[in-house]
Structure formats: C-alpha cells, structure tokens
Image 1 (tube, rainbow over the protein chains, first blue to last red):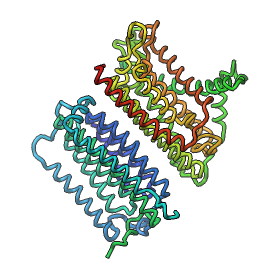
Image 2: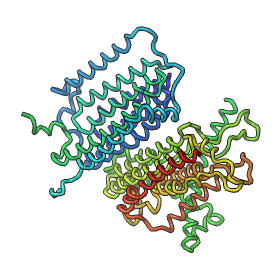
Image 3: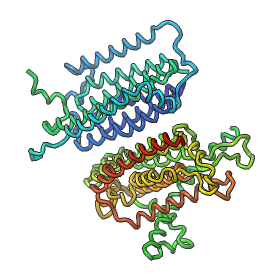
Length: 172
Length: 100
Length: 341
C-alpha cells in the first residue's frame, strides 16, 4: 500500500509541476518522472509488460522527441505578463474558465467514484501477466486493430516528415 | 492493499491535471504534454480495470493507446515545428489569422 | 536478516563493485591493446607492466578542477552524468552471470547469480538503454555551447536510430529462445548437438548476432560509430565542457555500457555460462572468458576501423541495418514455424 501511495504521490506531484513549470525542458523531464511512477504502478497491477513498454515507448521515445523539438526550437519561455504575478485561477478569460473547469471535473469524478455502494472492488486473484498470453490475445482477437495500428504509424511517419519539411522554394 | 477505487481516483486526478494544463498553459509544447498526461491517466484506468476483471484486454488496449499517442505526438510536434517557422512563437494566441 | 537476504544484498554490492572494477580494467586494456596494435608499449611505468595506470588516471581526474560554464543550466549540467552512469549500472541488474549456486552449501536454497530475475528481462535492458539517451542529450543542451549541443543531438539521434535494429535483433533471438527471461534463454542453450557443437544461439542466428553487435557498438557510441564524440570532429562533442569527476562519470558510463552489451550478447547468443570442462557452479568463469573476448573485439574494432561520417552512419543505420534486421526476423520466424524448433 505504501508503494501505491509513493508512486501515486510522485505521479501527481510531477504532473502538477509539469503544468506549473515555465521552462519547457523541466516540464519534459518532470513528465518523464511521472511516467516512471506510472510504470511502477503498472508493476503493482501485475502488468510488467505494460510497465516496461511504458518506459520504452513513452519515456524512451516520445519524450526524446519532445526534448529534441524543445531544444531545436529553442523554445522561449512564455512571455505573457500574466505569468509572473497572477495565479492561474485568477487570470482573466480562458485561463480562469479552464482552471475552474478542471477543478469542477476533479470534484465531480471523485464524487462519482466514491459514492458507489457495494464492495470496494478489491482485485481478484487472477491476473494476466505473462507476455505469452498477452501476445496470444493480441494476435488472435485483436489482430485487425494491430494491423490498422501499423498503417496508422506509417501514416503518422509520412505525415510528420511532410509537415516538418522546409519548403524548398523558400530561402529559410 | 489498494483497491480498484484507489486506482480510479488517482487516474481521475491525473486526468484533471492534464485538462487544467491544456486550458491554462499558453505554450504549444506544454499543451501537448498535458494531452500526454491525460492519455496516461486513461491508460492507468484501463490497466486497473483489466486487472480487476482478470483479463488481458486492459493491457492490450493500453498497447494500442500508447501507439496512437506516439503517432499523435509525432504529428503534433511536426505541426508545432511548422507553426513555429511561420510566427517564431509558441503561444497559441498568436495564431489568430482565422479569427473573425 | 536471513542468510538469503544477506546473500542477496552481498550479491548486489558485489555486482556493483565488479562493474566499477571492470571499467578500470577496461581503461588499462584499451590502452595496452591499442599500444600493441600500434606497435608501441603503452603504459609501463606505473606499477608492474603499468597495471596501476587506471588508479593513476582516477587520482588525476579527482584532483582536477570541476569547471562549470557560467551560462550553463547548473541543475541539468549536474544531472546529465548522473543519468548516464545510473542507467549504465541499472542495465546490468537483470543480467545473469552464473548458474544457481548455494555458495558451497551455506544457503538453504540456491540463489541465482543475478541481481533481479524479472521475467521480462530482455525488455528491461532495452528500456534502460533507451533511457540512457537522456544523459547525452541533456549534457549537450546544458553546456550551452555549440559543439556540445550539436554533439549531443547527433549522438542521441544516432542512439535512437540504432535502437530499432537493436530491438529487432533482440526480437529474433526471442523467437528462437521462446522466453523473455534471460535465465531461461541461457538455460535453453545448454547441451550439445552431435555431442560436439554447443547449442548456442549464435549458430541459429549468425546474422542476428552480427546485427546485435553492430547496433550495440553504435548504441554505446564507440568506434567506428563515435563521430559525435570524436576528438578530431567536434572537440569531444557533448562532454566538451565537463571536467574532473563528471567527465569520469561519462567514461564510466561508456565502459559499463560496453560491458553490459557484451554480457547480454554472451547470454543471448554465446550460451552464457555454459561451457565444456567446467562444472556448472564454476560457469561464471566461462562467462567472464566470453565477455572478455567480446570486449577485446570492441577495443580491436576501435583501433582498427576508420570512423564513419555522420551521414554515412545514419544511412547505414536506417537503410542497411534496419531492413537486414527485419528480414532476419522474418526468416527466423519462418524457420521456427517450419522446423518447429
């Protein structure tokens, strides 16, 4: 139980700091820490394959991509005059609305989740944690989504290359 | 021992943090990061439910969500790069030319 | 504090200590082998046959001044070598280096000579290898100098490009070995065919072995793929601005990554600790011999082959090695299906 609280606290605090940080590089690094904590939670849920895949795919590939983009764009800090002084919940316009909305969302979700009657939903004894079983289910029942996902990745690759290409006619 | 409700509560909190990030932040990359937080919160609840039902489906769906998140992050960042080349800024408030 | 727990903790400390030692030994071996390859003597003054040279190097590095560029981001500047070194050590935690042993009957039940036996060990190694990219890219960024940034970005782009071939070569071994746990894969390589040829996976997967080694050399940024950190090219790339112990951490990380790649290659392809003439409990001697042979090969390659230029390197990784690895995987899968191994 203490491990759950530890990982949960690290994930929540790191995520809060991600959206509170001004320097985008620190945001990316804190998100990697949050992913590490989530990976620990997956191990607690008897899902070692998902835990390792989370590190390989999210923390090891997607975040490297984010880091590259932040470094290459030399992303400036946000320069709006609101940043320095006013708390997000008191900034005008969309920000205040957004912060209030998010607070309302979390209150509503917690209310909905904690008012359910009946047993609190302790986990059963059976768990599918072997990669062999996951592979079998993935390639038999979910074979069609698997193939579609590979086409999706191909499309995303082509799209990313085309979108990020410099226009050869422009001189930049 | 943590129950299913504990994991769902944690997932809800993370999702709300991600939503707040999308609304509050004025930096395109941080908005994309907040979307990743939301996707991870959803992953957590999928795995928790999969464990609760004792099937492999939760983990399989997480596999697909991760793939889609990777594809979306790649394309999103490519869009951010091409936008940055136009206006030299990552503030979404500068891209208002379609506003009437 | 049962004896088993004490043995486990002792094993962890022993592995950590031996990894540090291996880095020191590699420093000496590299310089001596390079010297003999270049027909000169190498270190011979410090200690008998120069054996205390690594100690002299460490002491020299410790006494150097720890410089820090003024415009550098100090937190990231300090964090980067820590990430590199930690990931290098952590990857070795799931590598088994010997059979189960009871330490001559002192323990009630045998423990594996492995710090942690997880049943997804191969994936864990791959995951930690992908995390070590961050040490390099953060080192390049936080030094706030053009050479470092370019070197860091190039080096990390190289590493993530070769990770694909690395993973695909690993996948082809998994198809043959039928398990993700390194202990199971090594145990699947015991025994002999025709009483003569050991059942090592290198005989089933020769191309996979070559691809794995090539990708491993590129992952650890060693020659001939060391363009981003070559002295003649980018003034030592991402660790230009580091001095003293931070620099030592990067080199430590590089040597330990080499050791890890060799150890994993030994476990996956060369039969781990199985070998003739020695009983199972002394299998770690065979393991050391095989890892030593691979490390010698690493050093030999560095001082023999010329360096790839960066675009040649990336072309090789994407257009030659990756299709080869995919074809190897397909052929392996077809072979396993047909022959029913």
